Image (tube, rainbow, N blue to C red; front, side):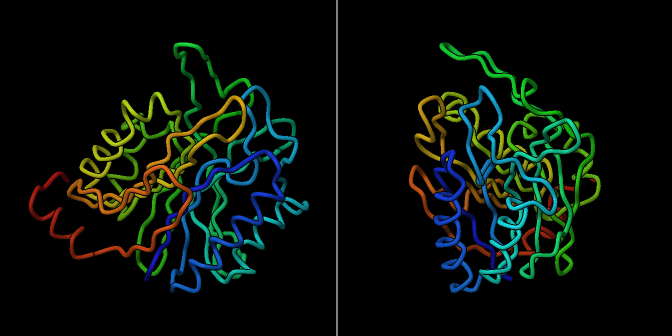
Length: 257
C-alpha cells in the first residue's frame, strides 16, 4: 500500500486551498497512493488571532468539501486538521476519510500551542477547546495513531500509542519557523525511536499570511530514526511505503515492551 505526504502553503480562502488540494490529491492518486497525509489547518489558515470564519460542521458545505476531496480523487485522507464548530466551542479537529468519503474517525488536538517568542505570543486556547482522547485507526492491518503538531512535545500522551504498538504516528503540523529550526527534526526523530514506529509529519510551509510563516520540512521517519523523506521548503508531495518487516525487526533488536 502506497501513501502520499503533502506539504502546503494554505491561505485563508478555502476555495484557493481546495483547488490546490484537488490538484495534489489527483496526482497522488494517479501515482498509486491509497491514502494521503495532509497538514494542520489545510482547509483555511487564519492569522492566529481568531478562528477562520469557514468553520466545518458535520453536514455543512465545508464538511462536504473536505469529504469530497477524498471521494472525488479516489484517495483516503489521513491527518490534517480543520477548525470545527461543535455546539458553542471550536475544536482543532482531524477528520480521516476512506476513498469513498466515509469517516474513519476523528481526533481533536489534545495539546494546544502556547508559546512566547521574541516578537510574538500565541495561545491556541484563546480560540480552540482541547480534545481529551487519542485515536488509533486500523487500515489493512496497519495501526495508525493520530496526533497534531504541539502534541508531539508530550511523550506521556503518546505513550498510549506506544503501548498499543502502533505502526505509525501522524503529526500534522503548522510549526513556526523559529521553533521548527530548533526542535522539529529532533522531536520527531525521538518520537519514532521511542515508539519504534514510523512517524509521518505533514506540514505547512512558507508565508501563509501576514502574521503566520511556517517551517515546512514535512518528514517521513522510519522506526530506527532514519529520515526517509524531507520535503524541505517547497509545496510538494512524496509517495512512500511502509516496511512492516522493518518495524518488526527494530522491535526485536531493542526490546522496549
